[in-house]
Image (cartoon, rainbow, N blue to C red; front, side, top):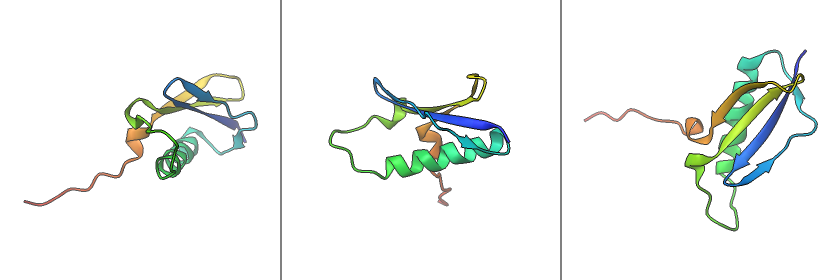
Length: 82
């Protein structure tokens, strides 16, 4: 199975994922990135975080970018009836 690395970019900070995870494909990597983003947005930080500019860069074991997951994509939207 391919290995994917999830590098988190928040503001000017980049948190590298040195170990990665073995996953079946890029679709599963997208799901993991979404879960990571939701978990991080639910975490309390010392300073305010601008989630609109934060993203997770997912690379494969060839160091190629597979996808970039914007944190705002992890916010569930619900339809409201009028």
